[in-house]
Image (cartoon, rainbow, N blue to C red):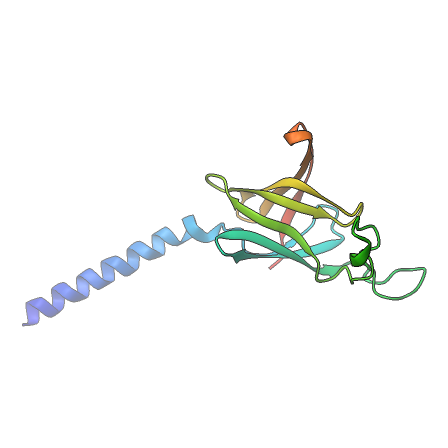
Length: 149
């Protein structure tokens, strides 16, 4: 009986130690809050049905200097959305896994009010590249985001 207990303890300990050594490999994931490349905003990225979705949660300058009111989505191509506050709008849209540490989907650019095909790629444990593209991916613009949490 004592031998069974010792063997069981050793097995449980080996499993626990194995998980400790495996933890760093899974530490780099896309979920969390990211500081945008221009350092003027933060986007909270979550799992939404197996895809990535990200919402603007912070702005360096949250108020419009002309009105001293919260900034709105005034550049949106959809006139019905122009009065919504920028904080809370979706930025990373339904990005599906695309192998390894990359996701493909869409990205919303509040500066011009357009949605583009895009990608989110982890480039390190605390860095990622977000790209928006036009013309089927022929012309892309990207920025490096930094994990802020």
